[in-house]
Amino acid sequence: MRVDKYLWCIRVYKTRSIATDAVKKGHILVNNQQAKASRDVFSGDKISVRKDQINYQYTVLDIPPNRVGAKLVDMYRKDETPPEAFEHLELLKLAKEHYRAKGEGRPTKKDRRDIDEYLDEDDYFEQLNNETK
Image (cartoon, rainbow, N blue to C red; front, side, top):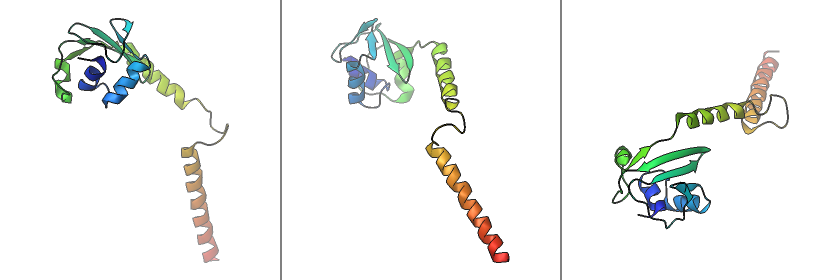
């Protein structure tokens, strides 16, 4: 089975075209060698997938006949991704939260919405004060 089709069948990628693009970009290694989309995958092969800044590592156990359900995926691959990779992702998420200190630079979309909501509340309270006078 082709490596792009295999990655699609075991639900690493949502569509086969996304899997093919990932192979073309060099995000897929089979047995520590860069693969082409047409490369065949066999039982016992080790596949390394670079996705969302994590290097996932899989061992091919068997070749599925077609795309399988999420519960059956473990019959066809063994996930050997080290837990340190997921910890690294958590650190990246925390670093992104502290990337821009409050009050520096342009406001983000969320900041803008919060500001608008705050200003709308002030207008509401100002109208109430004017009505009571």
